[in-house]
Length: 261
Image 1 (tube, helix red, strand yellow):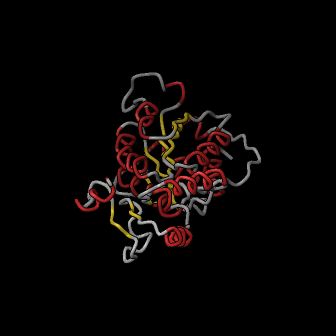
Image 2 (tube, helix red, strand yellow; image 1 turned 180 degrees about the vertical axis):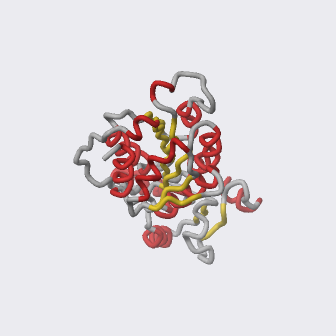
Image 3 (cartoon, rainbow, N blue to C red; image 1 turned 90 degrees about the vertical axis):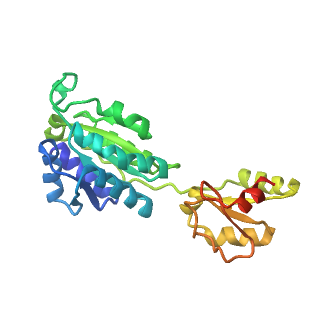
């Protein structure tokens, strides 16, 4: 088993169902490993499309979406979709395939510093080494899904992709959902007791909690008006008597006046 096959096995164990991207020379070892796996390689029109598709999968499922590109222009194309995942807090793994390790510091055709490119758009950027592939990948998957979720970048040199794998028995990654501690709950109730005009704002983190029913019951018990951000729009009923509108760039003037009070 080589490292490309090891990567695919780890993705499969994490619950990944698709890898989005465009074939190219350095990407072929990974695509060949995917061909033997239940994880499906999905050909996209461009690496930009691959990034957006992976971000959407991550946002909808909670499992990191995966996109892959070749070096240079393939990597720069990928950044737009990865940037979307960064802004929308969608779990994502962006894998850029690169030249062989001895060539990484040389100025040759298409080679740029992938890690410097992706660092401002991701929670972390890792360069994969032949003896640390599985450990680094497991760390990246966990980091992408951890609160707040977001994209993580992995740079895969061509020689590392084809090197013999050094596998360890790592467990299946666990997805950590937003949680509310007793201390935080007590602080919330204490603040409510002192507040004259409480207002509840439901945002992006709330949408991942799968607790719409519980939050609505809390709103009704406390008789609190609530607003949502654009990302949380639709998760609570806008027909509810306590609903006060949507905040954000598209907010109405009356909503702004209400929230400012």
